[in-house]
Image (cartoon, rainbow, N blue to C red; front, side, top):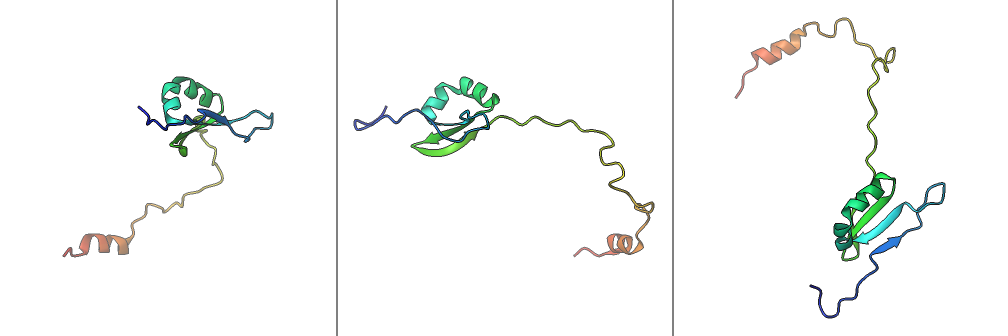
Length: 104
């Protein structure tokens, strides 16, 4: 699979990026290792870790936790936006250009 001169690189390297509690949140691992550990890596990402997947030592992708979707709250912009009473009034100049223009 690998050439005779292949020297395996460390599969997992913890970086120094940390959260307030001091825990390490970023990992770098090679593509082969990521393929074999994908299920556990998804669990780790869901728990808050960022995982960088490298190919030939070059970072190629990042596995991060999916951000939760905020539910819409009806009336949240009440009083902040308004619609003019005549917003749907006819616009004679626009209608004339739209209906009476010649297409070449």
